[in-house]
Amino acid sequence: MTSAPVAIAPPAGVVPGSVGIFGGTFDPIHHGHLAIAEEAREALGLEVVRFVPAAVSPFKPDRAVTDAGHRLAMVEAAIAGNPAFEASRVELDRPGPSYTVETLEAGAAAGDTDAWLIVSSEALAGFPRWRKPDRILELARLAVVPRGGFEPLGEAWVGSQFPGREGRFAFLPGPLLPISGSVVRRRAAAGRSVRYLVPEAVAAYIARNRLYAEPA
Image (cartoon, rainbow, N blue to C red; front, side):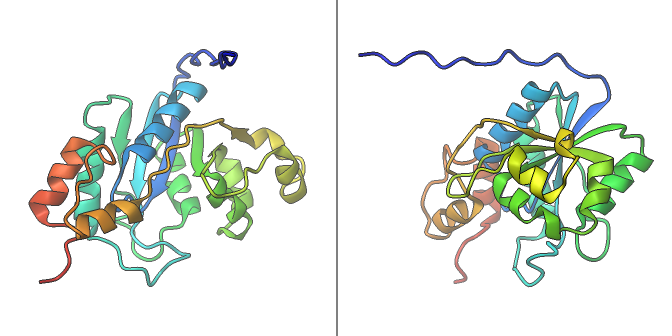
């Protein structure tokens, strides 16, 4: 017995002026990040997806992360072949914790009028505890992508947490690539290949700069 083919929605037409904001530590950026960004771009008709490496996560202020210059360079290397992707150092140049609301306000001041914030279902579960979530919803709509191992949330959850704001959320069906930065870092530290987990340019950058290598 063969399974029925899965219906794939056609790509949305590009919406002029639309921008997806995709934040994270990107330590390092990997194929899972890129697939999520491309899915959001196509499904929502985004003109641009802006990758925003965080300086200091407000939820993990003591977590050691790779130097910002290296993380930004890896993002730039990873997205070099996609003209719809761009990197921003707005959070790296701003002192203190990297609050999303401040990033969105900076974008609005620079001319962003149709912004989508791309988040995982894991991040959405903690969204009510973010700084000024209601202000975030004024500045951007949320595009939510699933993440393996975390409960998929939907409109019922939004209705319980942000009643009347359901229209500010879109739930994308995928993609679901089980890749994490921690896995990439552990493999690199052990001297193992990270090929096919990260773009070739990122793998070369990691090797060239001996990122994630255990101290001698």
